[in-house]
Length: 472
Image (cartoon, rainbow, N blue to C red; front, side):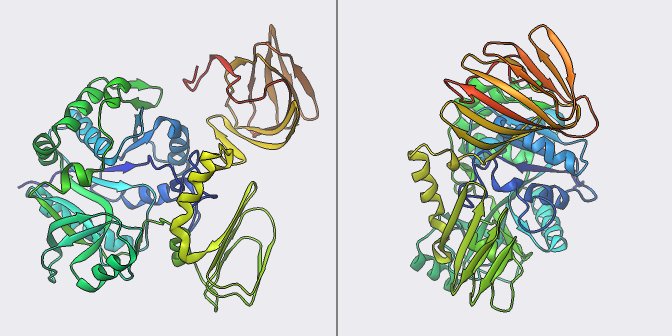
């Protein structure tokens, strides 16, 4: 049998609650640099860019499309395909949509499905496991990658094998969801359970046949979504109406639990899904007392602690197995053993409609970013950064006026019928209801201070008349 090309498919749709407050819904963990100079997404792309691999296909929710595109540009990948999910769905819908898209481009390929937010320390071992799995996927097996557990982890799902032998490939007998502690301990001692990495390798034609048999509803909805796919700037957008009809389910439940062709390759490559702050502590460098400190932290007589700081000095004395995470707008302090409870904490913040649950103080936009400096009754102050060549939408506000002061760089301003340039230390005023836009025509980032004033200052008081990023 001839060898088929391998296409990496990267799933980038996570919403990011377990590593709050560093990870938020608007900036989930795959975009964070937790263990080096590149983000988890960028590390994933590097891992699957070796010889024999075709350009990657990435699936993400449309809200994160500019973040994904920026991260791809940051490592100079020019030939990736970005598919936008118009609604948040499970891995089954993302994977099936990717399969159907690839079948439109080629008769058959091998598809390597990778989450975008995992750590794999031994890339060579990972490549070896992919090679082994590819051989069996060519023969029609639906391959997943199992991690031998070294602790009774309650944050992972598990793969079950009827018999654990020395063979690299094992046939699966079941999938189980995240267990309680006593069950996880039983799994650890049995030797017949492996952590479910959430990574898969299929032959596209085989997966299509299996989905048609076991998950026909998913297939029909995804077929309609892919048939209605539209080009949107540099993105491919699935048909929203059709995609909304697809059920929200993981590929494990939709297919892998039912198929007779599921198998597992053992992966021993220093894998972690970084599913909690205790996982971050495990992959970090430790001092002689097992403390991991990132940022300006001063600790005394502490043991087994994780201290992750972004902006200011934090001092700690006499703590053991404690997590401290400090961001500009939120501070988390907790027992490391209770790291899985972060998700419940975020749910409480959402119930209280706290913006800290979903957004950072600094908010990323396709043209740059803004940072909320301060606010009060009828006013708000932001620091705005516009990247070279970027521009904000042509817009107006019903309830607020804006005063812009240029700190550095050059701004091109459209102010009603006027079109003019502002340079360092110059300012302008945009009145309520005035159509306006802001552009950086220069070669360096444009930094400015924006003072908003008015009866309502919410981000939804923006009427976009035109926008180069397709948000109008």
